[in-house]
Image (cartoon, rainbow, N blue to C red; front, side, top):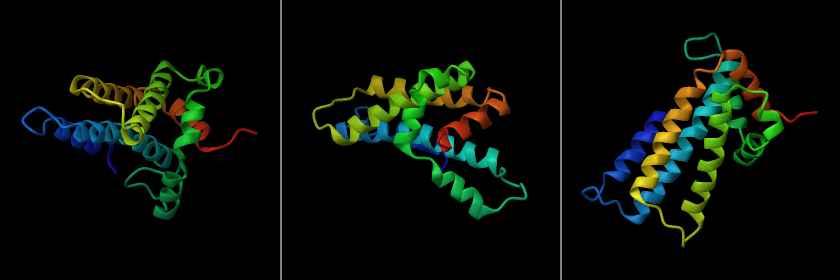
Length: 155
């Protein structure tokens, strides 16, 4: 699952129906935007902890790390203000967008009374894209520490 492909899918949904997306398209675009930021994180975790493409890595181990990230636990950790202060601003911003988008995705998928506007979803897509881009600007040491933080329980 490539995060930028999910964002592209969200953009396609917004351009459907001659620029006037249906309520379903707006909901699915919101969901795709969340999944873009979600899938960015396990990919980063697996690449940093096991090795990126081309590395001498075990694909089974890479997949295990990729699949280890849990939606709810990650959101809870991202909301932990005390812990998040230990990370650079780029990672804090990523965490904030992650939380917001997960909440938006839940509303899009489960709240029949929640409505979304095209402009609102466009802002969300841009926020996800910016958060993912800025996340990569944080030093590898900080990104690796954040990956450990979201993957493993503190003891």
